[in-house]
Image 1 (cartoon, rainbow, N blue to C red):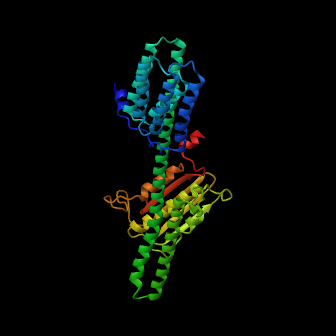
Image 2 (spheres, helix red, strand yellow):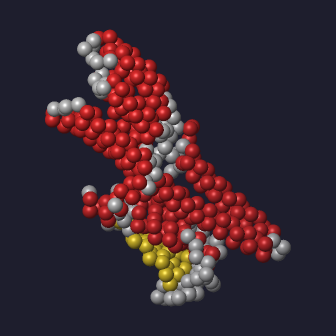
Image 3 (cartoon, one colour):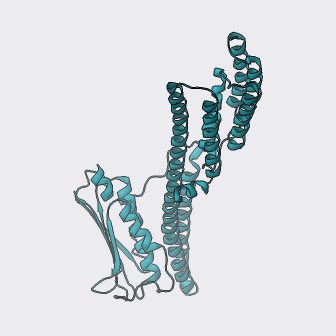
Length: 392
């Protein structure tokens, strides 16, 4: 009973059925012609012209088979049942095969109630026709096989379409999460630098105008880089020139971008060291981009939240096995004393952990034993997650 109740409450198919297309009109135009041609070519059929007119008129139900599948099926089967009782026979015209299209539409697009009601209607109509007239076992098996085959195809297509929609929804969700991480990492990094430089400029503006002018130049550069990164993301979403297959024109962040984080004049200054022992074999783009984004976010967090920090050290080591990234500051911090207050959680640390996991690596964030804050990421050179490595 639980299975029947679940089916009864099942919604209509997702996605919604398409609008009426030109093929529907062709089908509705061809069916009456076939019914009339068959009636003229097969004089042995009982009441052939009556059935030809009935089948030709019922062809109009094909136009609404997707939007009103149960209603159209009920009209078609109900009409033929009544006419069959009046004439004392069933339509033996091959043109009546288009009723299978109505059955297919019911199971492909209908709700659970519609499918159960339509199924009961088809079973009752088929049983009534076989009880009214003697039927050979082979004909009975053949009719049941055709109905089952049509129903199976409709349900299989429905299930596949639903699975495809779930895949698309999951892809959209992952893309939104990736975009959110990129926006957070990019905007937070550059805006934090702008805010820090603006504070420094305000402090020295009166006493040292030349220094204030240098600060303004730094702010202008950070703002320009922020705009460039934002334009890159917009181009990725819009796909340049309106073409869905247009390539992304902005290069993927790599080791040079990690080196660009070096800022000895910043507050606090950032010192970057990159050891590429196996530079002959380039890193996969996903791994290089992940290393850069984690380093960028770690530097941003240290500048924003490290109390009393005088330097931020970034060490990136690349060898045959993969990448190891260490970002440390010398601010005041320890276990249970994170940079960010416990009451105001952010997205930076979860984003770093997710980025590392997506390429099969690990990332740890926390107070360093010697003081300050440490971010350590270990990324495999393959750039594949554990599940992908096990499958491949």
